[in-house]
Amino acid sequence: MTQQETDQRIGEAALATDEDGFVVDTADAEERESAHRERGTSRPITVVGHPMLHRECRTVTAFDDELARLIDDMFASQRAAEGVGLAANQIGVDLKVFVYDCQDDEGARHVGAVCNPVLVELEPERRRLDDSNEGCLSVPTAYAALARPDYAEVTGQDAHGNDIKVRGTGYFARCLQHETDHLYGYLYIDRLSKRDRKDALKQMAEGTPRYETAPNA
Image 1 (cartoon, helix red, strand yellow):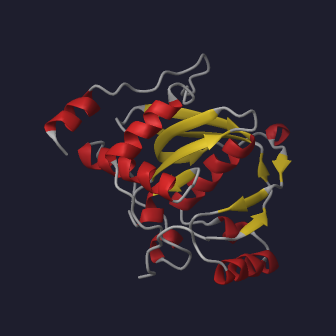
Image 2: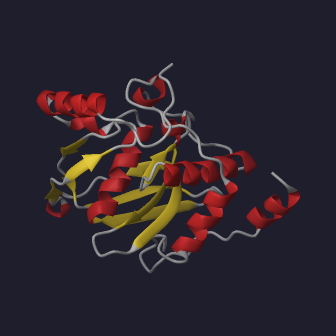
């Protein structure tokens, strides 16, 4: 990282929050994603069977330039693979951080990064399930219907270590749940029935990823 890049990062402000304390991750979404991606370098995507995907990741404790570079690389990798969310272990890094560039069902574009995410448990009356199809960059070319709540809240920290809250509806809610799962060692296929999991793995075996993948170690 050059001194100019370091100075630029120091000047990056934390996202504003709304009246409920949730980050306004729709503001300047295109500009922020582009800045991260252009600084970053795309890395290969780990796929099901890679040990990093099947265990809980380490807590982020250092909010430094190394973390900032990782987040940039994650945005670059996410775009190269045409994804809407990416967890650090999907590029082989054992840290609890994910990035996202995802639209909700109303078409609003959400862009951000969350360190040490925790999914908020919803009250029963707020749990309306959506059984849409779900896919994953780490299970390439496979899709399966999976019921998840159509609203989600995640707490965590931003790249500077500030406490943040993120919320989403529809497809973005699914993204937040999916990426948080990754960092605790779960793939979406782990939530499927044995039959549906087997079918998803068959789809993966018969397909060809459109992006670079990492060999399973």
